[in-house]
Image (cartoon, rainbow, N blue to C red; front, side):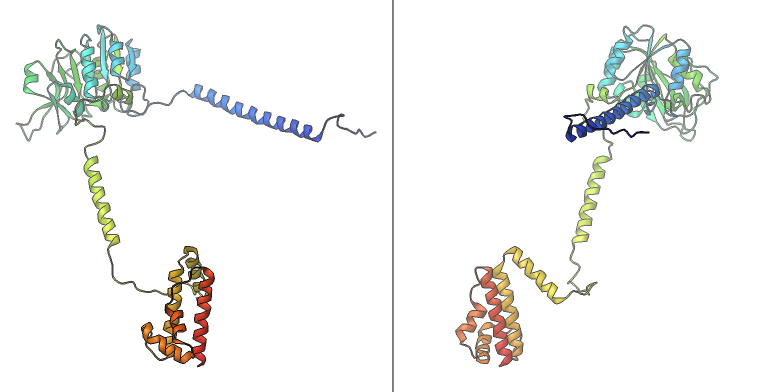
Length: 409
């Protein structure tokens, strides 16, 4: 058995071998990255886009969506088209014949979008508002208002094509109250809601239909939007009622407003804001609370009370640290003044004088004790500060020497 020896080809350097290794490693990394990207793309295609979570969204499969209702309508042969802006709703309705337009979640429906919708679908078989919220009714100008329901709706008590007299409905969010003028113009309510303890209070309904005019199609407003959701559509007689209402025409345009629609149709009223009404007062209250907190934390609590340090710090370390601070700031005037004040206090104590003895009274006593001329002692204690660090060091040495002379005298 013979051993085989492998040698590099002539002219191939070590750098070339390393280069090929780097290329192979890079190629492997790029391949794995490509596999991950393609795999993620395939998974996304298989899984599809996530179900919308918006309230009353026609594609929503959650409890607040209406996908179940839409599928039932399609099974009944109704052509359902979903749009998200007022312009798309008008375009989808076309000439309006054989078409019902329904508005789902109307929280983002502005007054301009509502006016555009009603004027552009005047030839439609009908316009339905599943979510007749207070802000929506104000912008429609139909003579309808909102009342707080005191009890569950009674029997239908109306004769409309989509209403069965024996139907029972629940999940009422608010009562739709037509004005006297709206009643005179032919508005009809179904499923009355009244307060037995207040017979004079306005009587509202779970649903109100306003007849058509030359400017718009017939409009139906519901005060029970939860009845159309996946969670409650099978409760009571909701399914049959809503299917008959929305399936009255061969085509159904489901208009679910979004943020793009708000941008295309901005509100025209000054008080129509995307922020809740309590945001302004809340911010003012928060600012006042912050000011009160700042005043409480910043008030003077009295004189400072010294406390023992949690650790023992050597005096030399403190002195060196203060010296480094003075050096970093370059404040030689203050450093010289501190040195002179400390020396003057120690000299006064050694001579039996008060520690705060004025310099004029201290200089003669120090000069006599140290045996030095008065002018020399006065220059040490009161001359101008040195101009450089060397002069400051010299001053410190001279003061120390003066204290030694007084101590030894």
